[in-house]
Amino acid sequence: MANQNIIRFSEEFQEPTDKYIGRMIDFVKKNVKPDDKILIALSGGVDSSTVTTLAHRAVPNKIHPLFIDTGYMRIIGGKKEAEIIAETFKDMPNLEILDKSDYFYERTFGIKDANEKRLAFRKAYDEVLNTEAVKLGCNVHMDGTIKPDIIETVKKVKPQSNVDNVFLFEKKIEPLASLYKFQVRKCAEVLKIPDPYRQPFPGPGLSVRVVGEINPEKLEAERTANAIVEEGVEDLFEKHYGKPFLYDEVLGERIPFQYFAATFDYKRDHNLHDKEREIKKYTESLIGKRVDVDILESKATGVIYEGEESRRVYSPVVALETDEPVDTPLLEHLGNAIPERFGVSRVLHQIKPGFGKYAMSIRNVKSTDAVTAKPLINFPLYLSIASEIQNECHGVGPVFQDITSKPPATIEYE
Image (cartoon, helix red, strand yellow):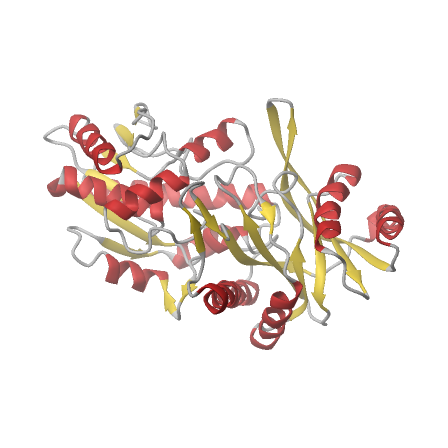
């Protein structure tokens, strides 16, 4: 019974939001039978929190929200995400918080290839969810799949963990399938969900931000650095605007859209020395300054659009080091031109040198719907963040800023 019957709410979003929510609640009621028991994958993000709240309003006695701690969750404001979930949804009936960290570590540590690692994570997730469904006697699965998830999976930009999966349920209900992120946020605000404008977080969590092979030390460095980046960016906005981020109600855009750290093994790919020289020559001809170029052994994902078609690529990462600052427009140009010319996935620009086996990248982007994104480049801010990362994260050497748009890069690294 692998998702034999996927039921998606197809009505396009319309104002007023409260009436649209009413129609979503009616949709859930219509598609839940008297004997159904519903398992809801609650991650704590805006999408899954909205679905859980909708289901609670529609069929409160039939839901079983499940938060699976994969071991790849964040630290937010000094708290683990599992603790935040427990506090936020303490009044939700049948809520279960399941710590499966070791289970996921055993199945994902040591894998170098990004796609293999993502598939291993998804297989582990499927196994855990199916086991719990059988244990609880749930025959229906409901989750927070939204329109961009479906679009990116169909176009093969990246396989979303909540789309095209193998769960043992009679049916899967997707109340948010016709909505973009900004529309989900509007619904979440009306439903009075805490922090409806929080930034997105990927289903596989920090596993896709630890680029390449994962080990305990590298994962802990990533978890610490990720918290430092989130707090650093929000502190800057708090200082200048009196709030940790801005929100454009007209465009439905959170500014910044997403900001986080990624962790690499800092090793050059010596087989690509000729390509390094070509990139160096091209870059120096543009900026008129000396540039050091390293192509790393670590690879990351990108996306290439060819007309209406797109394909996902998995290719090297280029790291640039300049002695002098480079203007933001020129960095943005290099972040797009180098992947297009030289077949790499993305470009990093060094903020702070250092010696260590790991390199960190700060990714901060502007986007409306996650289908496309532009990098937010801020050398002075990132310099202070980089210093804190090097002080707090064991084994970290140089710290970079990611200067690549989507496309040609994806927002996440794997």
